[in-house]
Length: 397
Image 1 (cartoon, rainbow, N blue to C red):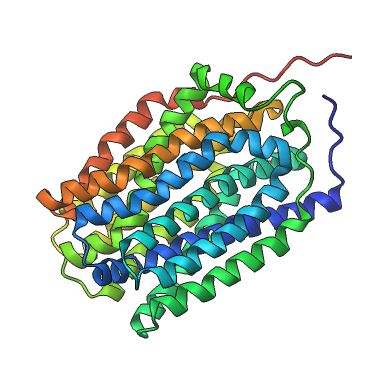
Image 2: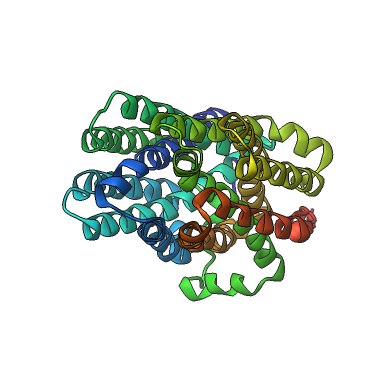
C-alpha cells in the first residue's frame, strides 16, 4: 500500500489534536480515581470488594481491546475516538449518579467506562504513531506525557474538590461533559491513518493472527508489567496513604498527584534518553528506579518517605507503556492490530491488579500488598530485549 505523507500543516494540527486526545483521556481517568475513596466509603466496601468493583473497568477494557484493532482499522482513529468519547461521557456521568443507588449501577457504568477507554487508547496510539512517522521524530512518549498532564490536572482538581467537600456527583458529572465535548472537538483534526488501515481480505480473523507473533507477545508481557505498576499506583496510592499512613483524604489524593507528576516528567524528557541510549537500556534502568520507589512507599516509616517513594515509582514507571506502544507500531502497515494485541495483554494488569491488591490488602494491608508490583517490574526487565526496533523494510527503486 502506498501512503502519501500528510501535509505539514495537517500534521501540526494532528499533533495538537493527538495531545488533546491523550490529555482528555488522562483527565477522565484521574477524575474518577480521585473520588474512589469517597465512593468506597459510601458503598461500605472492604479492600477486596473494592478490588472487584474496579475489575469492571478492566473487564470492559479487555472486551474492547480484543476487537479494537479491527475497529480502528475499519473506522479509523478519528471516528473511533469520537464514538468512545461520547460513550465515556455517559459512563462517567452514570457512575457519578449511580453510586447513590448501590454497587450494581457503578459496576455497569464502570464496565462501559473501561470499554470506551480501551478502544480510545488503541485509536489515539495509532494516530500518535502516524504523526510520529510523519514528523520523523520520536514523540510518542510525549503524547503519553500529555495523558499524564491530564491525570495530574484531574487529580489536583479532584484534591481541591475533596478538600472543598464538593459532592462526587457534581464533580464527576461536570468533568464528564468537559471531557466528552473537548475530545470530540479536538479530534476533528486527526489525519487519516493511511497504512494502518486494514489490508484487503482482513477482518477480525485476520487481526487474530497477530496473537501468534512471539515478539508482539513479549512486548505485550513487558507492557503488562509496567501497566501493573502504573495501574496499581492510580488505583491504590490514595487509599494506601489514607489507610496505611493514617493521612487525611486530601493528603492521599496529593500523593496520587505526586505520582502522576513524576510520570509526566519522565514521559516528557524520555525522548532524549531513548534517542541517546536506546529503548532497552533506558527501560531497564527505569525498572530499578521503580523498585526503589516501591520499597520506599511500602516500607517508609513516615508519610514524607511515602511521598518520595511515590515520586520515584511514578518516574520509573513513566516510559513502559509508551515505549511498548512504539515497539508495537514499528511496522506501520500492521500498527493497529499489533497495538491492539499489546494493549490487550497490558490491560490484563488492570484486570488482575485490583482484585489481587484488594485480596492481599485484606490480609497484609493495602500498602504492604503493593510490594508485589516489584515482581512484575523485574519480569519486565527480563523480557525488555523484545523492544529493540524492527529492522527497516527493504526499499525498492
